[in-house]
Structure formats: C-alpha cells, structure tokens
Length: 342
Image 1: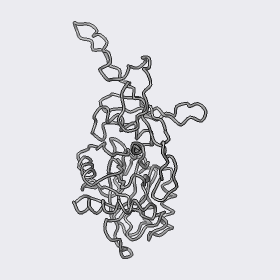
Image 2: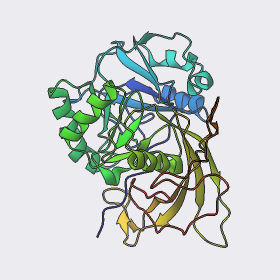
Image 3: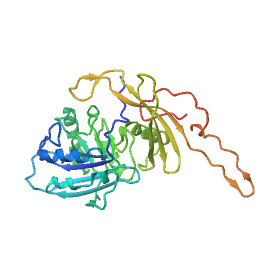
C-alpha cells in the first residue's frame, strides 16, 4: 500500500506565536499545562481569526518546571513569501502577550516589536504525547538529536498530522515536514538559512490553505525551484462540482520572474482506512491531489528597430498552453508533489 501523500497537510498559520512553557503538557496544552489556564484561554480568544497560531514550546530533554517568574523565550514568526521574519524576546509573565496586536501580527506587521532573531532557523518538533503518543515516541528523540547537533531545536505542542510523525516545521518560512529523519531535517535547516526549501518529505508552507500548499510544492518540483520566496499564491478558487463529488480548487501560483500557473487540486479519499493518530479509529484519509498544471505565462513579442515584429513564440517543450488555448486531455491523479504540465 502506498504511503499517504504529505503535500497539503501542514497546519495553517500565517504567523506563529511560540511561548516557552516547561513541564508537562496536556492534550489541550494552552489550557492543560503549567501555563495559567486563564492566560491560555485568553490567548486562544485573542488570536482567533487573526492568522496567528499560538503554541507552547520547550527545550528538548527533561521537562522540569522553571521557577515561577523565570524568563521564558518567546518567538513571533511571519511566514508569507517576501515578508518572512522572526522576532524574539524573554518575558517573565505570559499575560503580557495579551497586549499584542494580533490582527497586525497576522497581517505581517510587527512594528519593530522586540528583537530580530539572528541565530539559526528554529526547528519545532511536535512531541506532545498526551495529544498523540507517536509524537512523543518518535518526536522527542529527533528533537534531542537535533539539539545535540547544535540546531536551534524546540519541542512544540500540536501542529497536526500526527500520523506523519515525527513531524515538524522550520522558521521563518513555515515549511512543515513529515516522516522526517535527522539528516533530512538538518538539510532543511541549512536550506532555510540560505533562503531555500527542501521539497523532500515536505507537507507545505503554513502560510496557505491545504490546496495552495499542494500547488506550491507541485510547481516547485515541476520547475526545480528551491528559493523559498520565489513562489507565491495569488489566489485559491473553489471549482463547481456535481452532486456529492469531492471538492476541487484552482490555485494560481506566481513566480517572482513573472511566470504563473493554474494548478488544479482535488480532494481525494484514500483507498485504505488508517488512523488519524496513534490509537484513533480507522477511517479513510483525505489528501490533496494535483491533477493539472497549466502554464499561464504569455510570451510578449519583441519588436526590433529594423526587423519588425518577431514571430509569436510557441509553447516551450513541456510547457502548458498559452492563455486562451484549448485545453488538452485531463491528467490522471498525481498524489505526490510532482505533477506533469499540460
């Protein structure tokens, strides 16, 4: 049986607010840990519908509590292409975070808050065993290995996709990974520091919804693009479907050099039932399937001073049709990030 595709499964967050909280975590960590539950509930309410996702973090290793009032590390990270940043500080009282402008932070505006993070890209490994024991069994050794190797590694609470454990994400770009092993993660961290992204085992960029995550990865693999901020998503449009058919979307992916693609993404159901997390009931998983990539780029004729108009350029080999051309035959499902162009 083929493994469930990873593309399009990352948690969605334009901005991450990561709060250091030592000690044990419960299944709902913001309100079930040694963080004041009233503060946790207030952070959940303040961040709702702002594009900010709040999670707890702690250093790998033993989880003894810090003494009351001890400074704790805070990270704020915005993940949108071309506007990614990480700000950080130490605070004694997490209640002070309730004074943040969550709407502005979700929109990518930090207003000079705190200090810019100047160290290695933080890598956040899901290890919350109360939420899913696979995250603890597989995630904690990975986080410890990364920390021992000098990475800026942290354990983090729920980021979804437990069935892909060990799972993690790397800042500032917010690309998440599943079924990850230490060598791949180290490559991803090095790439992030250089402004690149590793596509292997990638679940998607947290900036976008699931169809857009899958579309971004499919175009990256199609054209061999590694630069993290070279691609953006201009929009996601729900396509009309008949009856009880599964949802389908058209995602417009743009390149910084002016190219663009229309990516068709279908939601599909897996053939075999699988648990969504360790110990959960069996159910067919849903996944994003890229079924078509159409090149929307129109080549502009060049007019020389004596030569007159240049002949119209036809599509390059392997490229999709120019805008307005008749569609070609539909592709079969492509379940990984790779896709064929029309």
